[in-house]
Image 1 (cartoon, rainbow, N blue to C red):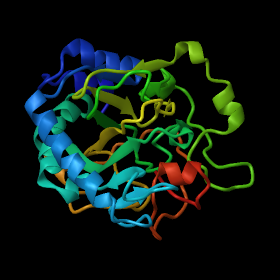
Image 2: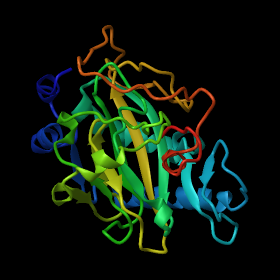
Image 3: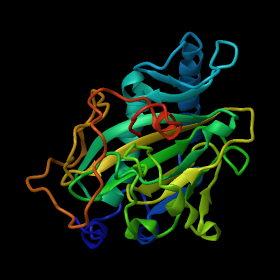
Image 4: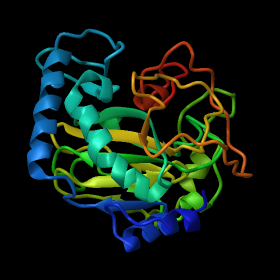
Length: 297
């Protein structure tokens, strides 16, 4: 569906101005969007998994842990597939976020994946400039990620940063010159970004960040000793079909969460970079950008 076709459907939860801003800029931020009681449940559930990660000594199917991780000082980089780990996370995606996604993708919405990324007060928690489309290419670009801050987030603890309008620009090569997948823009492309135009998406716990799969984004390292969890859920329009196998499907992957399945795939004529073969599994974007093997996002 085109933006004009999507905008012609009545809004479920967003204002028409917010929907138009998303298509114009490639992102929107919704400060304090989630009900505080629900935020508290999400925070409590998150803490449960942080505590469980203290038992881990290496990255596995549930946790991606960073160097120096210990029971005393957990360095949890990612909780994988939170939608599958606890019903609280899945209900949030299915019952709350799917309505937001439908306002920006059209009435027929597919759940793609979820993850929870953490900042842990270390220079290595920087996420470099990248775009999402190259990690999981589809037949069109009606693919977006909705983030929910589970801690108050400002410039001190590594907010998501986006380049407005970059969704209408080029898709960048996220392989190094030697052909090795890095999961981020090459230095010359990142260096050409006009940092004066960057928008940092900050807000209290419960703030939503929404960005297109084509939008260039990054996040600086955290200067706060308190971990900053960001719960991320990716959705696609039903007429966006994946070109490559899903890197880490959950039991909910490709589930229709609003509307109905598409009878026709919509094809965007703009090309998309193809990622490596992820069939052997993966860890996280932190692992990829740190050079810990060919890993997807």
